[in-house]
Length: 96
Image (cartoon, rainbow, N blue to C red):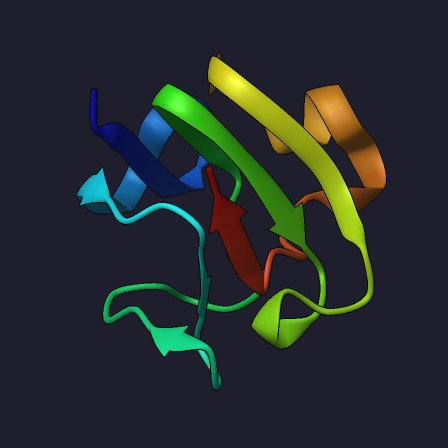
């Protein structure tokens, strides 16, 4: 099964989304270094959806500095409501 990921720039999956279907696994995606992912905007993600696996979400580029949080097979309509301080701070992702 492929891992699907949508990163959206506003609450409830609005404001435009960067979608990656299928998402390659065991690779870091970052707007700087790592494996560059066009359409990914640094420090702007407000909501996301994951199906078919898990992802670690990082504040720092290139999946450095330890993850802010990890989620598996979930819809998160508001990072602010679920994680508060981590809203609009996403810089890189590692999915598996």
